[in-house]
Image 1 (spheres, rainbow, N blue to C red):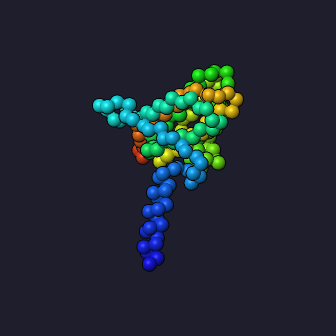
Image 2 (image 1 turned 180 degrees about the vertical axis):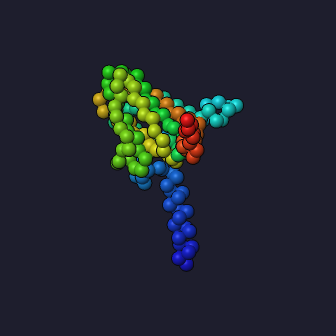
Image 3 (image 1 turned 90 degrees about the vertical axis):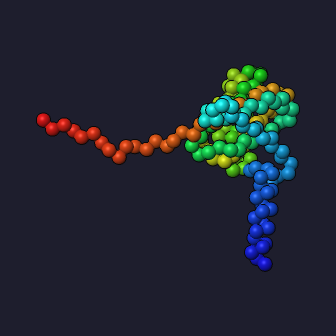
Length: 158
């Protein structure tokens, strides 16, 4: 009986967690920014996602999934209004704890990092709405880890 309960519980939790990343708060409706191959012929060039947004509420939530631990990731937000800063925060585990955060400077926010799985983007436009901006996501091709050589050059004896 306990075996079946554990299996059913696992399936329900996994299915629910796939429906909304980072929290089970039903009030939050994060939008997925879908990544597409940069090149249709060469899928090793990376993936890119673009979202054009006119944000009318104070806070907006987005998420992206499909990163590998060796894929460098670039997040760029470009706001139409260069004089009004927009707060951007990146979230790995939940919406209450930001992993990285900052504001647009002259309408631009850029962050480069490496993560695995998925992450969230929270955008707060408190000063002026609608806030019109684009979000650009780019995942580069997998970069192999740097492994130092086990061999050293021998010194010449005179």
